[in-house]
Image (tube, rainbow, N blue to C red; front, side, top):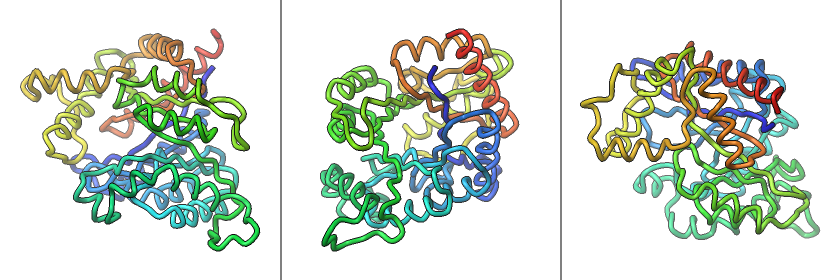
Length: 333
């Protein structure tokens, strides 16, 4: 049975604050640890009024300090925004503070609009094109110090922080396979190439010092509640958020509504429904069925769930219900 993990964006809700969002991330991670989740990952996004995890390594430290055993990491760090040396130093520091618990997931997208991306790192096109070289450089900086090595990450060197490649296309699948790294697919918002990317990754996987066989994580948006009706109601927050994203009208994470009628056009509904093709939304029986179908399709080793829920109590309940579903599916396997 695939292990379950959590992807969190530290949502800043309407009427909420950044401080409360970051505290909610810590509370969610503590609950994930108590309920047997394997990892708790945070994502790098910039210029988003509804996301508080822009300074991802700092939020990782905040979450790791409030937990004891769960692995904490990035899903992901957008490497074109950064110098590999800076990321090696940051994650080397995290590895020293929380030994054996830090993951480094890397993405190639900027995680923001292009103007903000340019403010983060001036030559974005060159940075994105150099992604494979930057990944290899970062691996070397986190590995053992070589003879006559000119640049050393301190902290960072010899920490061997586990690196994952994240992606929503064939590009990262090929690169992860070539480098022999674990691969996480962003099927929680980009469903189109999921199955073909996993096939490419597995076919082209080359064993490495890091990994001797392919290892796949797949992402879903997930909302679990007592009934399908309640879960669908809670999920309208995410639907509204995606409509706002399409309109380039990004705001704080909205409260759920009784109906999306009148809040989106027919084209916007098609766009959101397609992006959320693999979303797992429903009561306990529904989510068990959908999880089982999705894992049968993907043969994934791990499932990472993003729970876009406005109310923190409902988010914590959803997390518990997914954990119970995993336990029941494991027993049935």
